[in-house]
Image (cartoon, rainbow, N blue to C red; front, side, top):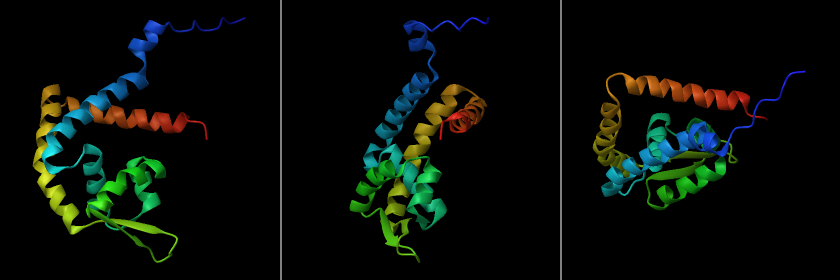
Length: 154
């Protein structure tokens, strides 16, 4: 009869947990980007949203949530301040049930102001890691995300 695997200790969970480690790194990196983007009034999450909208053009709200890997509730919470500040606009699609999101001219100006500050944060992380490391980490993170999606219960 096969034996059951030993339950991990609290110490092992605290030090080896993939979720904890990834979330800890994500919070620290987000704080760096937020700090450097502060003069623009944008947060890192808002910059990411504006970049996605600039790339996609007018996009259905549901599709934007998929592209960003967010649920609709989180995306709604993240788009409200950008709409309030006139950085993005929401309009009905051809099918009135579909809401299209798009970056506004003010959003493009905010994005243009933020890009040099984003570049500073990006350099601090990527150059701090050393040559070639960021590309490998980025690929690993994409694989981790894929594994999580593939193995998540429906």
